[in-house]
Each structure stands twice: as C-alpha cells, then as structure tokens.
Amino acid sequence: MEERKDQWSSKLGFILASAGAAIGLGAIWKFPYVTGMSGGGAFFLIFVVFTLLIGMPMLISEFIIGRGSGMEAISAYKKLAPDSLWVWVGRLGVLGCFLLLSFYSVVGGWVLVYTGLSIPGKIIGDGTNYPDLFGSVIGSPWVTLLGLLLFTLANVAVIAAGVQNGIEKANKYMMPLLFIFFIILVIRSLTLDGAMEGVKFFLAPDFSNITGESLLYALGQSFFSLAVGFSCMVTYSSYLKKDVSLTSSAGSVVGMNIFVSLLAGLAIFPVVFAFGYEPAEGPGLLFIVLPSVFSQLLFGEVFLSMFLILFLFATLTSSFSLYEIIVAAFTANGKRSRKKVTWLAGIIIFLAAIPAALSSSSLADFTIFGKSVFDATDYLVSNLMLPFGSLLIALFIIHKMDKLLVKEEFLMSSTVSPGLYSTWRLLMTWVVPVTIVVVFLNTLGFI
Image 1 (cartoon, rainbow, N blue to C red):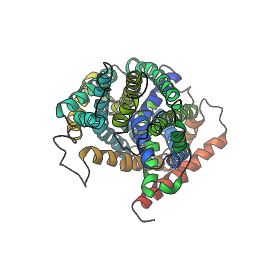
Image 2: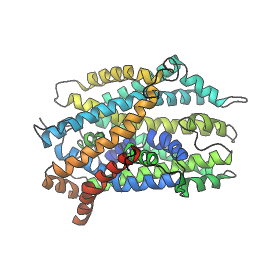
Image 3: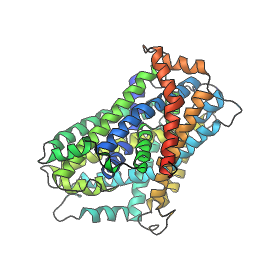
Image 4: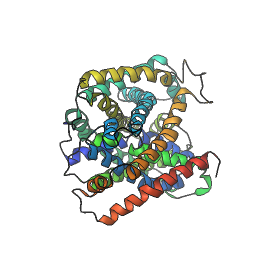
C-alpha cells in the first residue's frame, strides 16, 4: 500500500478540522443536558479532568498511529501490526462511526428543520407551545426523514470534494463563525437578571449527585467530545505533514474543546435559571427550553436563529469526520472513486438512520432493552463502544506499536522535553486503561 497523497494544506487547517470533528453535538447538544442532569459543576469538573488526563493522551495516540502509518484507520493497523487481529480496532472504528451517524444524522436533521423554521421567524410566536412544536417535528415521519435526507446530502457534498477542497475549506469558515456566535450568545446570557444562579450551578461543584453512571457519562463525554475511540483522528492525522507537532496540535484541539464546552454552559444555564426553567430538561433542552426563553428576550428570534446556525455548523463539522473515516477506509486501495463511495455511504447511512428517525413516530412503541432505537444506539455507541475502542487503542500503542516510531512521532517538530513523553506514556500505560476498566466495573455494580 502506498502512503496517502491527500494532505491538509497547513497546520491551522488540520487543527480547525480536528476541532470541528471534536466540537459538535457532544459539546453543544449533549454536554449541556447531561451536565444539567448530573448536577452541574461537579460533572463539568470531572469532565475536564477526564479530558486532560485521558482524552488528550488518547488524542495524541490516535495522531501518532495515523501519521506514523500514513494510512486511514483500517490500513494503519494493518501496516503497523501486519497479520494480526489488531486490524479489528480500525474495523470497530468504522462500524462505530456508521452506528454513530445512524442517530447523529437524525439530530442533524432536527437542527436543519429548526434552523429553516427560525430564519423566517416561524418558531417564536405568541402562544406557541414549544414542547408541542418539538413533538410535532420529531413526531412527523416526513419532517424527520426530510431533515435526515438534507443533512445527509450536505455531508456527501463536502466529503465528495476531498480533504483540502471539502473538509478543510468548510471548517476554515465554519469554526471561526462558531466561536463568534457563541461569544455573542454568552454575553447576552450573562446580562440577564438571575444569570449568576446559572453560573453558580454550572461552575460550583456539588458532588452529591455524582454516581457511577455519571462517571461513565463523563468518561464517554470526554471521548465523544474529542472524537477519539473510533480512530477518526487516525484517519485525519494520516493526511498530516511531518513538520507539524502532534502534541501542540492536540493541545490546541483540547483547549478549544474545553473552551466551547465552557461557552455552552455559560450560554445555556444562566438563561435557564434566569427564567426559572429546569436544568435537567434532557435531550429536548435546546429545542424546547431555549425557544421559550429566547421568546422573552429582545431580538429573541435573531438570537435563536444565530444559535441554531451555530449548532448546525458544529453538527456538520463533526459529522464530516465520521463520514471521512468510512469513505477513507473504502478508497484506501485507490481502486474506488471517492465520489462514488461517498454517495454510496450516504445512501446506506440514510437507510440505516431511518429507524432512529422514526423512534418518536412510527416506531415509537418499538424498544430495545427498554430504550427507543435512537436512545439504544446512542447508549451503545457513546457509553460502551467509545470507551472500549479507546481501551483497545491504549493497549495497541503501548504494547504493540514500535516504541521508537511512537517516540519519534511524539517528539517530531516539537520543543517538548522527553519528560513530557514519559508522562504521556505513563498515562497511556496505566491511567487511561485502568480508569476505563474501573468506571465500567463501577457502572456494572462490581465495585
């Protein structure tokens, strides 16, 4: 196999694309409602600790595997550990991205529908029942399927264009706009009467509501928010030039991710508390609570539209990475057309996402272990497959991958001391795998 020819044009392009992969539904949709349901400040603190001590070392590991091999996820493990079962780590990643997209694309469709409704001002209105509005959107098979189709087509159009002309170019515009919109929303949120109660809830730790399941959610959130565990970043870093520091790039991505999570909390919780809403609203937090809150603000329709556009940008930049790992895996040998594979992947993912899209309508009575198709897929991917995939990657890079290659990639084009490499290796050898196993055992009730 030859090394991949497609590359990022610059370090900034790679960082923005990686940050775009990381900052999406996890940071803006899932993080606020899971934080609200898990007690606020304590969950945020645990999430930050997990992100720095586990998520960041994992991110560096995927970068090392990707650039060290110069291959996408499946081929990377084949090259680094030929004739072994380690190739299944990459295959698990491709399968995980496929399953993740089967419910992620559904939420992306919701966001598209809400964005389309908000721009002409058709969401906020006198007497509007926002729970009923959300229920009518997710409860309509045709509306959810249309949103799913449009979201899928948007992804296919960008991924088919390639790395530089598609993913990198899109992220160079989307990511800066995301930060600008978020900062405006935070400023507006913090100027409300009673906003400080929301800030206190979000930033003042209260560990009384933390359980084993909360720890599992925080661990899964740290993986989900950095797009690690499914080898997405293995594929992204395989397009990276050798003169780029992996450690500084990882630091930039982690810093932006924590910053956006902080902004998400500061944009949402002060508004929720200012108007007396319940922070533990659940998955409907953004779609039910925020429209009702923005309806009471001056220029509320404008702020709601801005937030939904921001949300759509973040959702798309994350889904790009999920599509890319699938498409890259099936075009690695150079025998298949990228455009054809992208369109075929889009069709298959659209069909696979239909059951999750219909979970609140035609398939509302169909459950898997007491959960809807949407919730069951989310739980499987976020809380089981991502941590398990991360555990396998940690074992691979420490116990199987060539140590000299690992150290060379870690220190290449970087001014970091060898001591940082030793710290990273210690974390990947003991802290990351042990933490994953302990959290799993605690959740299952064994400890």
